[in-house]
Image 1 (cartoon, protein in one colour):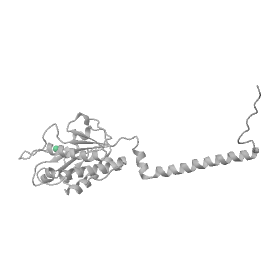
Image 2 (image 1 turned 180 degrees about the vertical axis):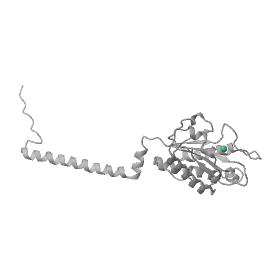
Image 3 (image 1 turned 90 degrees about the vertical axis):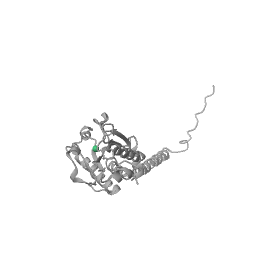
Image 4 (image 1 turned 60 degrees about the vertical axis):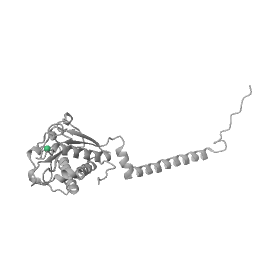
Length: 245
Ligand SMILES: [Zn+2]
């Protein structure tokens, strides 16, 4: 069998060892340049707010909010002489708030007053929704967090943001001198997980604020939803957050 001559090296056959080394060094420098430029471009992209928000959202669930519809599935709450019941108003408002929040991508659980789920409930926020007595001579709303809060800073901020958003949406004034110990020692706020920021709202008086509470529940719900969204934006940097009309 005839011995084949080895094929000539296509790269080095006509080159001196010095030229070959120069060739590989220039290639290595080119690759290095591409890597450096690519890295700089990638870092720049990561700094872009849209991309940063998207990355922050990857792998993370949407925030969760618990809404307790005051007295629901337990008792009627306050009752007016004409039969108007607090529990009905609270449930209707809670469902409207849930609708607004879900439209903005928030997970929401609407809970009955004594739901077993409240024990150790973990969420980004919890709000219990109530309405005040049927007195015609009183008007206003109020909020409270638990007296011995595990995270007073977070709960104070939740309360503060809700005061601002609710007053803006409803035009109602805070009625601070009727905040009771019942509100500050409210059972659900003692039962939720200590790391869940919680508060209770009295949306207005069923007497003096009757029209708002029965005929303008969209404004009531927007006032609550806007405060909760503002809180979620601050605490969880939740993207795509917009303000309800
Ligand atoms: Zn109540």
